[in-house]
Image 1 (cartoon, rainbow, N blue to C red):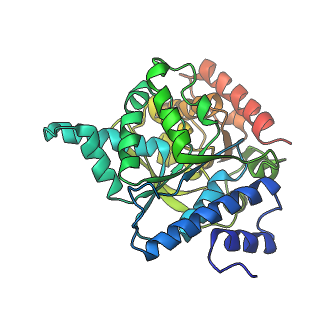
Image 2 (cartoon, helix red, strand yellow):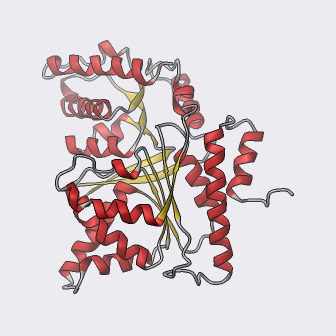
Length: 358
């Protein structure tokens, strides 16, 4: 019996047939799990979501495994296949920023229970909630997450999430983790935990042998970087994305597969602080940056932001591929940051060795 069209499994098999994906037993197992959940949701859409907030609500899925295993890609295939009604897809960090904002807004409105009010507003955007990269580091998130998610599940939320960690490892060694533990128990009762088995890291395979610093920046370099970005997106269309950081919105016109394609001026000539670059490194697995100029005294602030960016990506184990005016050893000609920039050069070299080599 042939697979119905436009299901997650059907689309995945087509990508394999077209040579856009490599065969991967771990991915195939996960897409089958997502396909089963897809049909559960589809069947209930036909009955007008009668299972919501009932004991018949299907269990969600928690997909965890190593970086570059295609978790986000598989979840996105599932999300695209699901009916347009009642669904939302967010990066987990962006979701928590939104949740805190809604809770604070409810407090200003003197709501009896701000978390319940925020939960009600969140669920209005869709009961199927897909999170990319669940990772809890902030104590402010850890302290509200159990009450918030219990409220969402009571309202019929189905959660599908990716993570690099098993639920038992979330917020490990965090302050007051004992108050976070009930969330882990609740999460494990509401989702099927699926480990995408070890296999080919598609990012490493695509990036293997890639020079992390291409120069000079010209049309040929731009074409090379654009082709690299397309390969990393696995032929999916890029999306505009906004990263929320300390009250400001950082807009990335082209992103996909947890990778941002950005021009130097868009980040390093904007009024961003060191903490903003940490947020960016938390959000993306890597950046492709175009048109890095020679940095002299007139580019003092931009050079400082570039150093912050490299530090943030390095500390988070992310990759950076750059198209620049000249080789990296000659990119900084200013006077203020000579000593500090030597560390930046060292980190750029280490990042190329660790993340862009086989």
